[in-house]
Image 1 (cartoon, helix red, strand yellow):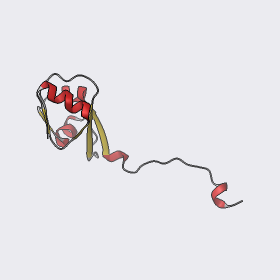
Image 2 (cartoon, one colour):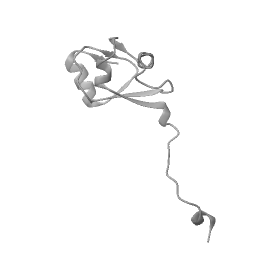
Image 3 (cartoon, helix red, strand yellow):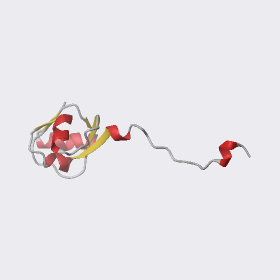
Image 4 (tube, one colour):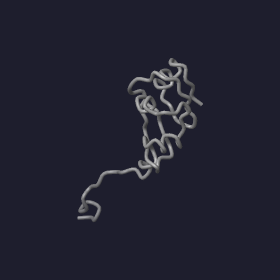
Length: 89
Protein backbone atom coordinates (compact mmCIF):
# COMPACT_ATOMS: atom_id res chain seq x y z
CA UNK A 1 0.00 0.00 0.00
CA UNK A 2 1.41 3.47 -0.86
CA UNK A 3 2.71 5.70 1.93
CA UNK A 4 0.09 8.44 1.47
CA UNK A 5 -2.69 5.91 2.09
CA UNK A 6 -1.00 4.42 5.18
CA UNK A 7 -0.59 7.72 7.01
CA UNK A 8 -3.53 9.11 9.04
CA UNK A 9 -5.46 12.05 7.65
CA UNK A 10 -5.02 15.39 9.40
CA UNK A 11 -7.02 18.60 9.24
CA UNK A 12 -5.93 22.00 8.02
CA UNK A 13 -4.97 24.78 10.44
CA UNK A 14 -4.26 28.18 8.96
CA UNK A 15 -1.01 29.80 10.05
CA UNK A 16 -2.64 33.26 9.73
CA UNK A 17 -5.20 32.61 12.50
CA UNK A 18 -3.24 34.22 15.38
CA UNK A 19 -2.90 37.44 13.38
CA UNK A 20 -6.67 37.96 12.87
CA UNK A 21 -9.17 39.19 15.46
CA UNK A 22 -12.87 40.00 15.64
CA UNK A 23 -14.38 42.74 17.79
CA UNK A 24 -18.08 43.10 18.60
CA UNK A 25 -19.96 46.37 18.88
CA UNK A 26 -20.55 45.57 22.56
CA UNK A 27 -16.74 45.47 23.03
CA UNK A 28 -16.49 48.95 21.48
CA UNK A 29 -19.21 50.14 23.87
CA UNK A 30 -17.12 49.18 26.90
CA UNK A 31 -13.99 51.06 25.74
CA UNK A 32 -13.23 54.39 27.48
CA UNK A 33 -11.92 56.05 24.28
CA UNK A 34 -13.89 57.55 21.40
CA UNK A 35 -11.25 57.10 18.67
CA UNK A 36 -10.63 53.39 18.22
CA UNK A 37 -7.72 51.85 16.33
CA UNK A 38 -5.70 48.63 16.65
CA UNK A 39 -3.37 50.11 19.29
CA UNK A 40 -6.28 51.21 21.50
CA UNK A 41 -7.83 47.74 21.29
CA UNK A 42 -4.53 46.09 22.24
CA UNK A 43 -4.00 48.44 25.19
CA UNK A 44 -7.54 47.74 26.45
CA UNK A 45 -6.91 43.99 26.23
CA UNK A 46 -9.78 43.38 23.81
CA UNK A 47 -7.57 41.72 21.17
CA UNK A 48 -4.32 39.77 21.26
CA UNK A 49 -0.95 41.49 20.99
CA UNK A 50 -0.27 39.40 17.85
CA UNK A 51 -3.34 40.66 15.97
CA UNK A 52 -2.63 42.61 12.80
CA UNK A 53 -6.04 42.52 11.08
CA UNK A 54 -9.13 43.43 13.09
CA UNK A 55 -12.71 43.06 11.88
CA UNK A 56 -15.63 44.76 13.62
CA UNK A 57 -18.81 42.66 13.48
CA UNK A 58 -22.45 43.47 14.23
CA UNK A 59 -23.07 41.85 17.60
CA UNK A 60 -24.46 43.75 20.55
CA UNK A 61 -25.58 47.33 20.99
CA UNK A 62 -23.69 50.56 20.47
CA UNK A 63 -25.01 53.75 22.05
CA UNK A 64 -22.02 56.11 22.02
CA UNK A 65 -20.43 57.87 19.06
CA UNK A 66 -17.08 56.26 18.14
CA UNK A 67 -14.60 56.88 15.34
CA UNK A 68 -12.88 53.82 13.85
CA UNK A 69 -9.55 54.03 12.05
CA UNK A 70 -7.64 51.25 10.33
CA UNK A 71 -10.20 48.52 11.03
CA UNK A 72 -12.24 46.34 8.70
CA UNK A 73 -15.96 46.84 9.33
CA UNK A 74 -18.85 44.68 8.12
CA UNK A 75 -21.84 46.30 6.38
CA UNK A 76 -24.17 45.82 9.34
CA UNK A 77 -21.65 47.15 11.85
CA UNK A 78 -20.94 50.19 9.66
CA UNK A 79 -24.65 50.97 9.44
CA UNK A 80 -25.02 50.65 13.23
CA UNK A 81 -22.02 52.91 13.91
CA UNK A 82 -23.18 55.57 11.47
CA UNK A 83 -26.75 55.41 12.85
CA UNK A 84 -25.40 56.47 16.26
CA UNK A 85 -23.36 59.27 14.68
CA UNK A 86 -19.95 57.63 14.55
CA UNK A 87 -17.59 57.38 11.61
CA UNK A 88 -15.54 54.70 9.87
CA UNK A 89 -12.28 55.60 8.16
